[in-house]
Amino acid sequence: MITFDRVSKRYAEGHEALSEVSVDIRQDEMVFLTGHSGAGKSTLLRLIMLIERPSRGQVIVDGLNLAKVGERGIPRHRRNIGVVFQNHQLLFDRSVFDNVALPLVIGGYEHREIGRRVRAALDKVGLLTKERALPVTLSGGEQQRVGIARAVVARPRILLADEPTGNLDPVLSAEIMQLFEAFSQVGVTVLIASHDLALISRLRHRILTLRNGRLVGAGS
Amino acid sequence: MSAAEGKPRRDGASARRTRLRHLLQGWLAHHRLSAADSLARVLDHPFASALTWLVIGIALALPAALTVALDNARALSDRWDSPAQLSLFLGGSVGGEEAQALQDTLQQRPDIEQVVFVSRDDALAEFSALSGFADVLDTLERNPLPDVLLVTPVPGSDALAPLYEQLKDDPRVAEVVLDMAWLERLNTLMQLSRRVVLALGSVLVAGVVLILGNTIRLAIESRREEIVVIKLVGGSNAFVRRPFLYTGLWYGVGGGVFAALLVASALWFLGGPVTRLAELYQSNFRLGGLGIMGSLNLVLIGGVLGLAGAWLAVTRHLRLIAPR
Image (tube, rainbow over the protein chains, first blue to last red):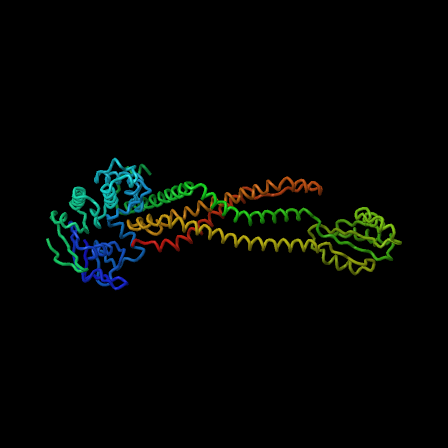
């Protein structure tokens, strides 16, 4: 589903964030990506989302060689990927419902369909009663679940998460991870960047470890 | 439509059509949403928005008001339906009978509507009455004024110039004065005024576009984070652009409405005195206004300028805002 073929990313200032990374993630997999901050986790996710482009090598997502996706094709590519951000990236002047509905509005879904899907997604993350609330009135864990609902509402085939449990206590973190596992079980490819080794090693999934931009031990 | 939806569709072409229809509906829905949302945002800050409207309104009202003034001036000048008149000043040796004969001959011509004879004595009497120089004129030993024939050609005839040439060569006529020079001057002045209005209008229109561009730039800056989020979850440039274009449209349309109101109130303010002045000149002239169509045009122009300004700002600034 996601293939990196000898991918390197060197930033303009000379720092090499990724070196010769090759990895293959299958469709039904849930994979953790770990390593110290600055090891290249975020860069790897950003390459998949086409926020960055690789200096060398190829990234292939869902059979699509990203080198062939032009500037104008980026929005369409991103619509096929659900992303959960560490800092949530919610719109704080919009209700929970409007935040979750955003990808569907962008995708041009019909009004009734939007309502149906948003409520289904909010139900899945346990926030159905908060659809009229503003994000600021929610706790950190709830905000993160709004972010997850938004990431899955358009039923993407790939779900990326960058430190989704970064600011959460262990109980909430475990709940969030259970949510991701649930999506993985219905066939969504899940890739989670996290440095919470204690948490992710308890879960039985493949762990990719990055060290100074290189992949070490594609294990477990 | 609902009947068609009731039946399940299986073949690919109609499925594609359904998909296309959904896309179109989604697109229209987002236009509606953007338009309503942008309007709500504009109305959320009534004072700031009213100021923007007023600035645009004043900038649009100025050229519009000048155009209205010029239209009125032209309407006024068109009312002098016999603008061209020839004054034939007869030679001093031409006697009253000879003058009478000339008047009769001219009166026969098909291209002349009317010939009025003003004798030198009548002219002097009229001049002394109107000028207030009666005392001075009384001291004159003899009447310095010549006999005059006022020749009015048939309206609309082009024979004025040939007529002028013919009459000029008549031995009985000392001088022919074509009373058209002032009309030409007026027309030239009007043309010049039109150019000035056009130039002024262009500058102000450019000003409006820049003002709106700047207003939209500020709106973009204040929603920078939102734009980043939308781009992150796959919003296209067109999607991001749409609400800002509507914001520009609302500012422009509001400015156009303000401009129409300003022009209308200026005309209302001036209408009474102008009518009274016209009455003093025995004229039933009334100030003409923008009219419904003119006002709508002004609103339309405002809207187009708003879109143009927003487009300018959006194309310049949106590209710079990308997820980091």
